[in-house]
Amino acid sequence: MTMPSGSTHSRTTTHSWNTRAVHAGKDDLAALGLHAPPIDLSTTYPSYDVVGEAERLDEFAAGHDDGGPPVYGRVANPTVRRFETALAELEGAESAVAFASGMAALSACLLAQVTAGKPEVVGVRPLYGTTDHLLESGLLGNSVTWATPDEVASAITDRTGLVVVESPANPTLTEVDLRALADACGPVPLLVDNTFATPVLQRPLTLGASLVLHSATKYLGGHGDVMGGVIACAEDFARRLRQVRFVTGGMLHPMAGYELLRGLATLPVRVRAASATAAELARRLAAHHRVTRVHYPSLGGAMVSFETSVDPVALVAAVRLITPAVSLGSVDSLIQHPASLTHRIMEEVARKDAGISPDLVRLSVGLEDVEDLWTDLSEALDQPTR
Ligand code: MET
Figure 1 (spheres, rainbow, N blue to C red):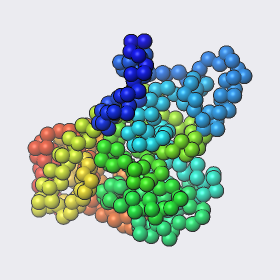
Figure 2 (figure 1 turned 90 degrees about the horizontal axis):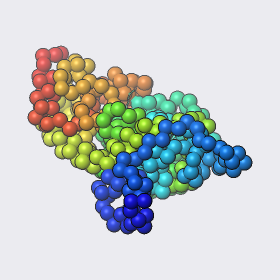
Figure 3 (figure 1 turned 135 degrees about the vertical axis):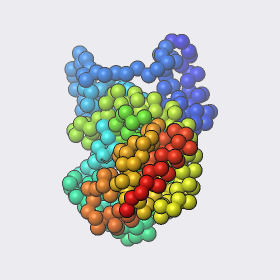
Figure 4 (figure 1 turned 90 degrees about the vertical axis):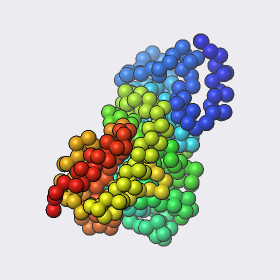
């Protein structure tokens, strides 16, 4: 022991959210004599006490996690737990459960509710294309009613298990009054995909939501090199998610847990810096003669979408500094055409219902200099097309 264990406690209660982003999930490290969090790559754990471990395995299968050796690597992992602890703290949640991707995390929420006899989902469009498709296809045994925020209360029945919303939404950056929506949901859990806002800009649980979803692949990781998903929620729902994860095996890899925990430390500075650049690019885009509409959230953030009179496919092919690619939230800027890629899987009529124009282009702003990004964008916009 290199420091008295009692001294770690005062840190957790007195420091600001930004400070906690750096230290959350790591409060025990100094007492362990460590600086960087250890990475536990074990796929299995010694079970000398077979009877005792068998009982513990039953508890894990029921969704409990005692924090000890997890018997098997699919069940839990100490490095992943650190990320879960940190993310739960930053979202103001009791618990968090991490998965191999955002879609695995969403699937676990759906399965938990479908198998509890609550198979109906109320969805508020727009949503990420594959999320929309998962709800619409009923692949996991659910049905869906699409509703505007004002229609949610009347769309809910006694078999509704989830209300699903993104705010700001992918790809139009549409914002919803989450507090009013949570009120409209009554006892039905409101799941808010907070991937675009991150807990830096918005903490949906403080506004009445029950479940916060992140594609951790995006801002939480922040460098385009780690895939993961996570749900922040109350411990009773977390237990049900761990039950689903136990049998479906959608566990986050320990290396990903390490990288995501590392990402959280720089999340506030990355999001604030990229947001300032994005806000400036949104202003300049709005004044460009080939841009017909700009979408930028009142909340801020590092995502900008715009409709353009340039062929959007030609536009994304013309950038040189920005990478034409799906995904978002990396230190480098990415641009893509939702109707072709991220929202391609939706029927055209569904895209229309969601307000996703075929002319819409989505930009994820990174940490490059604003002038370099603007030169790249404006040169691509000024090319002779159409
Ligand atoms: C396969 S499409 C990609 C994913 C990602 N969720 C995005 O919106 O960019």
